[in-house]
Length: 224
Image 1 (cartoon, rainbow, N blue to C red):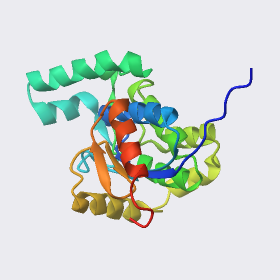
Image 2: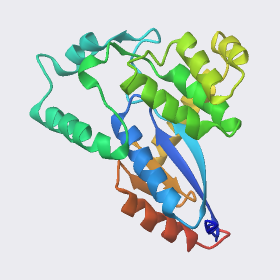
Image 3: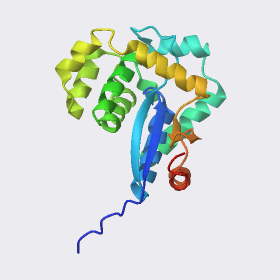
């Protein structure tokens, strides 16, 4: 028996503000897309940049050194509990966090440049997923041009062009300005899912929260 085609009732635009080294962003995006898959609406996603720590040098820093500078003798009980929650939730979401093995804390400006170009080619979702997996599961430096070039190739972009652009200053200021724009809007943590430019779902909320948000967005006036 032929599978019944899903009837699309409306188009919902969602801006996802995130950083590729944010574990909540990977988990939250999995929850979001699980909801989008169940919805009868077409979801149009635009990925937006955010840097959890813009003070990280562009060359990055060893992860243990970074964590020591942030937490001193060791992470707090609250931090440890957060990490435990993420590791417990990850398998059901189909992802893997290897926090104890991460060797390097990159500056994510270059990754956001790649995301900008990928989004412009309709490849933002694939590229974001590849970046999350590269950092958290494959333990790679997602600030490194060679890694980013490989990811670009893997998702169907022109890797040689991406490599050339990463060697220049292309779109660095545009990324910084976009980050500042969303900070000025009040985005102070990620992930942040902005529906139809009207309201937001903050954090790694379960699929049910996004299903509710999608329906709410669908009821908004078309000229809102």
